Length: 326
Image (tube, rainbow, N blue to C red; front, side, top):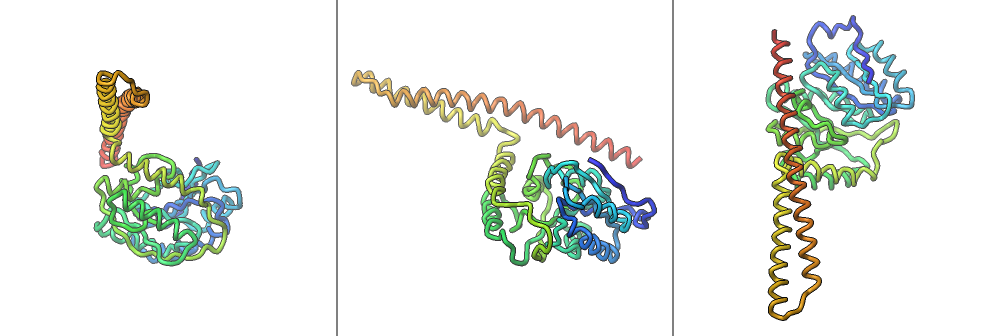
């Protein structure tokens, strides 16, 4: 990962950066010049300092040349480069590590959302009214049907106060620090943040047709999204206590095997006839029950290691904050 900093003569360095706009860009050479011009107009009207961190996620068009020129023209631009495509979640992570602001904004470079709406996303956070603000799409778009199904399934599984999970959003830096580093889990940042006690608001944001480039997402992403949704649900329900899920399932299957065995023995004693399918149920239930229970025990060990890792990270963060305060 390569980071190109802002120009040292940038006037925005006079004030500490409050808002870092994270812009994942994959082959967006046609859209980036206009997008950054709009960002410049937006930033000029703000009372707090902004920066725009563009993450070039393994682009193969002229994106790198466009960004090199942008760094010379716009003092607020910083560039992070991935040598190969690593996905939005990894791009946001790289941008977070390079960003200076205590408020982060996820915003795509495809001009379907205009930078003029970024201050509206940040306003509730700057006013200490919310920890995260997400946009609710206003307008027509190609994948509205798929997005609607995805959001309805998400609301059915998770208790969240928003209608649109996978959209532009602003959030406190600490939220990103608490997110698991998993591919494609950026879609569930709101779910995970809300589960951790952070407050979430939603505002309408205008959506415009793409004028250049092409979408990087197709129908093949639907099964991936559904499986990720189930993985997040399991993480929130049983991630801290995996034995609760696997152990109960194992005990239930084991009990079914024992009960079936007693029934089979009763039939054998009364009629003197063995029932083969009952013995098959007994063997299957006892074997699967044992496997699930053992998986639960192993899961408990993994959960214990994860808890220790989180505690170490918390202590490192506290140590870094104390050193910064000193």
